[in-house]
Image: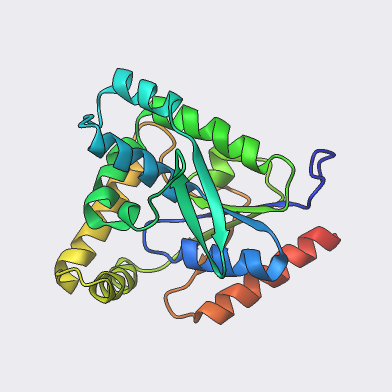
Length: 229
């Protein structure tokens, strides 16, 4: 373990949209007593602020200016956490389908990736953190002690997302939700900067036929084995 890791190891969980990274990461962080850093929420926060400011996702000059003035924080609230942007709670607003689609475009822009990369590294350098996203183990913390690549079939990920959206009162169909998952995969895998891909040393976890508890138990066991090694 690196001498900088005064609080524990760094755990990186990467994978495609809808694989359950956020849910698994929050629960695993609680089990291990680690801090959960949701990098996807950070990109969604930038996308939301760009949307509010009428900034096109390919306007790098204005995106650079936007990122300079953004302060993103995670604040624990009971079993959950709030996402704050410049002190304001945006936890609910960043989870809409519209912001989600804009995020895929925004997250491909180099100025945004560079700005958030520095924030993420500063948050996690001392260890004792679990970060989830699409390029944590390949770009943000390639030296993370434990890496997972969490995935599931597009159909299963679409089904999970559909149930989540319906529970929030959004009017969507299962078919269109699966189609959006497939589209998001295509965008994430083909983007120029930090495309979605599994790190060579990441442990693959296919959750299609696994329960949340099965995934958690496997990951917890793996982390503890790495820490003890």
